[in-house]
Amino acid sequence: MTDWVPDVLGDEFEQRTLPLGEDAEGAVDATLVRALPAPRLEHRPGGWERFVSGLRGLPAVDDAVPLLDGVDVLYVHGWSDYFFQKRLARFWSSRGARFFALDLRKYGRSLRDGQTPGYIADLTTYDEDIAAALDVIAEDADTSRGPRRLVLMGHSTGGLVLSLWASRHPGAPSAVILNSPWLEFQLAPLRAAIAPVVELQARLRPLDVAPQIDLGFYARAQAEAADPDDVVETNPAWRPVPSMPVHAGWLHAILRGHGSVADGLSIASPVCVLLSARSAIPSRWSEELTSADTVLVVDDIARRALKLGSSVTIERIDGALHDVFLSRRVARDDAYARLERWVTGWARASGN
Image 1: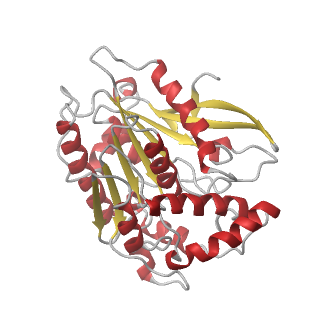
Image 2 (image 1 turned 90 degrees about the horizontal axis):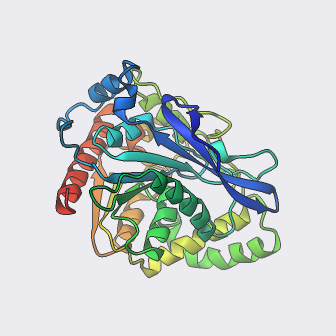
C-alpha cells in the first residue's frame, strides 16, 4: 500500500491508495481519506474555528474528555459520488473520533482511465475495499484503553453496501448510521417483476446502459440549498451532472441487495437512519425540490429500515434533501442535532 499523502480537500485531510488487484479493466484501487485531528492543525488557523461556528445550536464539546474517544468512523459515499463533506468529518473529529472515508473502486479518487465508472456486478465485492480500509485504520490505532469501536456511516448506495456488510459481519461495527440509505427500489411494488428481466440482461449484456433519467434537478437543488458562508466544492468528473450511466450488471447487483433487505437483515448493533420527511418527483423544476428527497421514496425506505435489525431509530427531517447534511441550514442543523443526540446516547450506553 502507499503512504498517506495530502488530499484534494486541503490540509485538514490526507489520502492513501489501497491496491485491490486487477479485474477485466485493469488495476483496481480504493482510496481511504482521513481527517487530521484538531491538535495537528493548531498552527493552521481558521478551519476548526469555522467548524464550531458552522454547527450552531449543538451542545458544546468537552475537549478534556472527548465524547467519542476510542471511536473510528468509516464513511462510504453513494452512487455517482465520492467523499467531499468536510463539515461531516469535522463533526466527528471535534468529538474525539478518528474519521475515515472510503472512495470505493471506480469512484472519485479511485477511478482510473479505461474503467467503467461505479461499475460492480456483486455488492459483496466491496468486502475487499472495506477490509483493506479497516486494515489501514487498525495500523496505528491506540488500544491502550481497550478495543476501539467502529461506527459505519453510509449515504444512499453506500448505506445499502454497509447495511449488507454489517449483517454479514456481526460484531464488527458498534453502530451503523445511514443517511438516506437506498434500501428499496423506487418502484418497490414492481421490483419482483423487474428483477428477472434485469438478471437476464445482466447475464447476456452486463454493460448495457439504461436510459438516463437524471435531469440535473438534484444537483440544482443542492446548489440552491448551499451555505454561502461554507461553500461545498465538488469535482464534476467525480460527481457528474447528469449522473454516471447505469449498467445492467450494476442494477442487478443493486436489486439483489434490495431483495436481501426485504427478506430481513440481522445487524446486531444499533442503527440510526436519517431521512427527509418527504419525497418529491423531479419531473420539472420547482422550489419544492429544494426541501425534499428527489431520489428515493422516503416512506418506503423508512419501512425497509425496520428490516435491518432489532434496534433501529428512524429520524425524519423536515425540509431535508436526499443527502440530509447538504440541505438548507435549518434542515441541516436539525440533522446534525439529531445525529448529536443519537450519538451521545449511544456513546454513553456503550461505555464512554
